[in-house]
Image 1: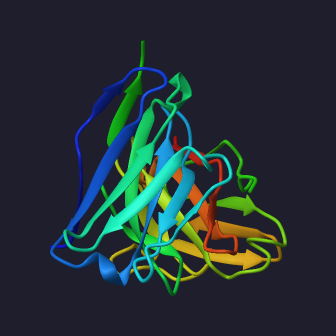
Image 2: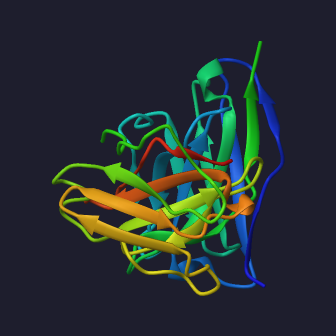
Amino acid sequence: EVQLVQSGAEVKRPGATVKISCKISGHTLTKYYIHWVQQAPGKGLEWMGLVDPEDAEAVYAEKFQGRVNIVLDTSTDTSYMELSSLKSDDTAVYYCATVTQEYWSSDLWGRGTLVTVSS
Amino acid sequence: QSALTQLASVSGSPGQSITISCTGTSSDVGRYNLVSWYQQHPGKAPKLIIYEATKRPSGVSNRFSGSKSGNTASLTISGLQTEDEADYYCCSYAGSSSLVFGGGTKLTVL
């Protein structure tokens, strides 16, 4: 069974940086884009960005540009999302998901990682 | 990259049909047929229920159907069941390898 396994919950201070991992098991990441989605408590899904496995180039949503870094380690089939200059508004569950390049849809999601930003 | 527009909530009775709309622009929904819909139950990850505007992944009930006209995509759920109560999100390709989600619609099955 193919799964995306995300790292565990994090608690960070305002201004800090968080780095979350997303490892595929049962398959290889080289076939899919990997994207990251933020969901604040009680709020909707917000697209953050994605990484292209062919050239490791990342594309980011304007809202997160300059604060987010998404990378792909093909040797370990793991994607990482790093979000810096954390503020309380960044308290959220962060999901990784594969994106089928042909249809730009995601049929495989991680279970989410809760990041709490609190002083 | 503005979020796609969805009504915040919709409700229906078991057995009824409901439609959730998702309005974008000529740069996303109107330009590409690459609209997907996701169902999300509380505390769970989103689940893909429609892709490429009208197609259903294997294993998704045929009570779910999608359509698109101009800048608006729609999700119809027929024969409502209590387990359909969830949040529903549309998502569109927006060009330059980017995606944009709708704000989400909370479906209540009365």
